Amino acid sequence: HRSRERLADRVDRLVLGKKTIDADVMDDLEEILITSDLGVQATQLLLERVSDRVKRKELQDPARLREALREEIARILSVDAPPFDPAAAKPFVIMVIGVNGVGKTTTIGKLARRIKTSGLSPLLVAGDTFRAAAIEQLERWGERIDVPVIRQKSGADPSAVAFDALDAAQARKADVVIVDTAGRMHTKVNLMEELKKVHRVIQKKMPTAPHEILLVLDATTGQNAISQARLFREAMNITGLILTKLDGTAKGGVIVPICHELKLPVRFIGIGEGMDDLRPFDPREFAEALL
Amino acid sequence: MFDNLSSKFQKVFRHLKGHGKLTEQNIQEALREVRLALLEADVHYKVAKDFVKTIAQRAVGQEVMGSLTPGQQVIKIVNEALTDLMGGTAAPLELTGKSPQVIVLVGLQGSGKTTTAAKLARHLSKNKRRPCLVPADVYRPAAIDQLTTLAGQLNLPVFPSSVDQKPEDIVRGAVGFAREHQCDTLIVDTAGRLHVDQELMDELRRIKAILEPQEVLLVADAMTGQDAVRVASSFHEALHITGVVLTKLDGDARGGAALSIRAVTGCPIKFVGVGEKLDALEVFHPDRMSSRILGMGDVLTIIEKA
Ligand SMILES: Nc1nc2c(ncn2[C@@H]2O[C@H](COP(=O)(O)OP(=O)(O)OP(=O)(O)O)[C@@H](O)[C@H]2O)c(=O)[nH]1
Ligand SMILES: Nc1nc2c(ncn2[C@@H]2O[C@H](COP(=O)(O)OP(=O)(O)OP(=O)(O)O)[C@@H](O)[C@H]2O)c(=O)[nH]1
Ligand SMILES: [Mg+2]
Ligand SMILES: [Mg+2]
Image 1 (spheres, chains in turn cyan, orange):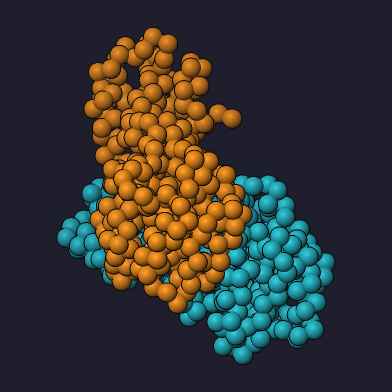
Image 2 (cartoon, each protein chain N blue to C red):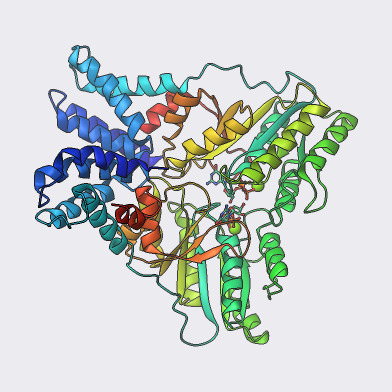
């Protein structure tokens, strides 16, 4: 994470080099926050919060400005929510949703690997019956981590796949069922209806399920992630977020306005394409990497 | 629906009706709004800053056209400058030279390369070319299956690569395959990679050296945020890309990445992806993109409504 250290250095130079917090410092902080994808509003909100404290003389030492900003960001990201606990039900059903190409299928592979390592037995459900070779992709992941995959033919009704998979889960005594879904634009009404139907069918089969609905967001995405989170949340009760592709140079700062507005916890972060590249989310660490 | 920026502009300029010329002072507040609109559209911070500076220079001293308010006049100038910056008119593929001509698609993970490869093949075959698809992604699970399935849907030839081959060997083999199958164009799908992954960027350099492609297209997601400049400039430095395909414009992303990428690479955006289906590929229109980035449907109709 070389680029992140460099960014932190920049902030240090910025605040250490100046005796008081003046407009230049604020401008530079604005640049850092905006270029980390926090967006105009969240950036203004954060800068207002710290500048209030500057005016109240709580933050006369510029070196403490950065720490104050980190604290504000970590506070926003520390959303109060029940923990992610796949042992809480049997089978524990997880639905993974999101727009095209954000990393849903890969994340499912990584998550199943984590769950398996923790001693539970996962089962994967190939609910993306639309995209070319999406089923095969999930099957390759199943082979890689040695976890069974329930599939039907390409083009099958995804809610039927989910319905049958829950039977299979019971028969095989699986502890955790993870349902992959096709990527879809949050603005496409018919595709969102299809997703809701998958949800309804799962719920009908098992009234407490799905126990987790995880929305996958790509750290490379800018302000559009806010619209994604809003519209997927309108469609169903998301329980958490997963932020992928944090191994690149994108900061994923857009989760700050998202967590602020929607109060959704970030469950995990993706930091690569390998099976062990999924980590629990740590608000403090994230804020530090941001600035 | 009345859009954001133009209603803000109305507010800014309400007290300015009747002024004959745009002055430094009276456009300052308007340009602040433009800058914020660009940032909200994910245009890179520096690109937005430079752009607004250029606009200020262009606008100061201009007469406000009789039918327009000062706000509309500024929108008009902004829109024209944005359109110019994104290349003015659409740029076609440049496929000339000895056969087979080669298009290589590169980009970050999940940006839409494989889908775009198939879309381009369809587009070219509709234009009387004989394209052959070449799956050179041996890393992503089932990437070869994905392109092979899409080629099957289009009924177009696909090079039979396998995951135990090296991408370099795949593309070498594909040239001979194209000749055997009387194909005049190779469309090479490569694995998604991070611009900071030196090993994989070197692999692309080698593929490029082997194929000497006519087009190296960066496939970029229209939803990309501020990182777009770094991604695009890294790919451009490593490979001298010849153009860009901007995907997933069928959502509600404002697509400021288009401006950022264009500004840092100077390369034209040649196509846009507007859906998952293989016919969802369109030629890029700078003027439409400009309206979209500004978040104002069609700027011209707004101006004409004056
Ligand atoms: N560098 C990096 N790449 C990732 C990460 N997560 C996923 N990817 C890659 O992103 C690309 C898309 O991932 P998928 O899992 O296919 O995404 P998806 O959301 O299932 O895509 P669709 O089903 O087509 O909507 C693949 O090349 C993955 O290897 C990550 O954390 N880091
Ligand atoms: N809505 C929409 N989806 C698209 C578009 N282009 C591609 N996609 C989808 O985006 C996802 C990723 O597309 P791929 O073609 O697999 O992307 P890729 O760049 O080859 O991915 P990797 O090989 O994993 O790096 C798939 O679900 C595609 O269907 C587009 O223009 N609009
Ligand atoms: Mg998938
Ligand atoms: Mg691909």
